[in-house]
Length: 248
View 1 (tube, rainbow, N blue to C red):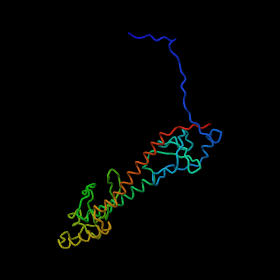
View 2 (view 1 turned 45 degrees about the vertical axis):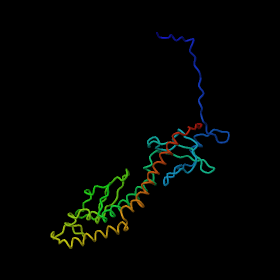
View 3 (view 1 turned 135 degrees about the vertical axis):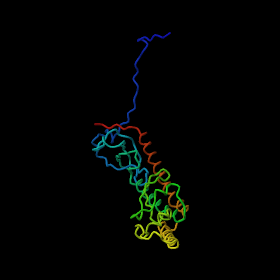
View 4 (view 1 turned 90 degrees about the horizontal axis):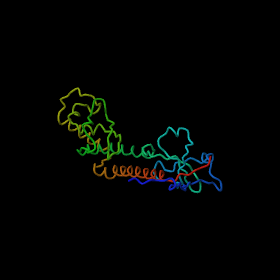
C-alpha cells in the first residue's frame, strides 16, 4: 500500500553553497584585472614540469579563439611572489618537448636499424619487407611504431641492401640504378655487401644493436612515457582545482 504524502509534512531547506572569491587586498578581483595578469605557461613545454603553484580555475576565456580551440582550462597561478594566468590543455602531443623527444627517438631508431642490418638482425618493430632497396632511392623514410610511439626514421640504403641481397644485386650501389650487367660475379657482390656493412656500422657509430637499444633508444622511450604521465597528472590536478569567482 502506497504511503500518502501530505503537503504539511514537507519543507524546503536552503543549502549553503561555498563560493571561493579571488581578492586583491580587500577588493574582489575583476575581469579587467584578470586580463591584465601576465600570461605564462604553468607547465614547462620542454620538461613537462610545473613552474609554479596553481591557485584555481577561472571559468572565463579572455583570449580570441578560446571558444573555437580544443579543451582547456584557465588557471591563476603563483610564480615567486607574482601572479600569472595560464591556459592549460590536456594534449601533450602539441608541446615542443614532446615533439623534440619524438624527433630524437626517430633519429635513434634510424641508427638502430643500421646497427641491426650490420649485425644481420631483423628488428622486431619493423617488417623489413617494407624496406626494399629501389631504383633511384638511396634511403627511405618510414612510419613505424616503437613501444606504442609513432616515429619517422630514415632507413639507410646500406641497411636495405644488407636485408635484401637479391634486390641489391640488381642495383648499382653507386647510383641506385639498374645494373647494365646483371651477371655480377659473387666475389664482386660480396665485396659490395661488405662495403655496405661498413657503411651501416659507420652510420650507427659502430654500436651493437642491444647496446644501442639499452643506452640510446630505451632512455628516450622512458622520457616520453614520463613526460606523458606527468602532463596527464598535471591536467588531472588542474581539472580538480577549485573554481575561483571574479567580479565583473
